Amino acid sequence: MDEFWIHPRLGTATRDGHAPRHYLVALQHAVQTLDADPHWQRWWHGSGLHGCELGIVTEGRLDHLRPSADIHRVDDLLRANFTCELPPAGAGPDELARRATTEVRTMFEVIREAMALADLPPTPEPSPAPGDADEVPVTAKSLPSIPRELEQQGYLTLTQVQDFFG
Image (cartoon, rainbow, N blue to C red; front, side, top):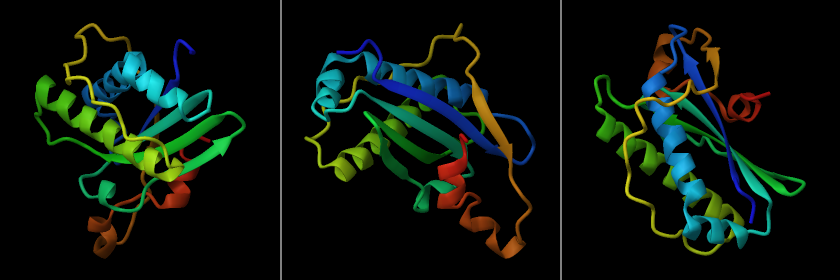
């Protein structure tokens, strides 16, 4: 088995140009925890694919409710891009870890269903990201202005999610 099978790409759709750094670190940590777990490695090995490029775009609180998954195979890799909800302002490290773990597991449940794979293994217990985590590479894109009546519906369309990481 490969040393790393999940290749995360993190992004954020912003209005103010600031990325939610602490949550992005928590998401990266949740992905790395699954990547290192032997049960999850065996589960992914059953897919027959070399790896999973997992793109995660953080958005506003309602965007995760919309159809926002883009999943397709490219050679021996799976490319899966998702939007996910930002945590409430002021969430602590334990809450960020719990939310990030839940979001990433939910993404893999969608992947599992789309690929008709076996049930997911148990998820390792969420743990806060290390305080000295390296700077997380993030693709940040500003949101276009939208009409006020559409503001509560979210911002990224499925096409924008597909194109987010270029």
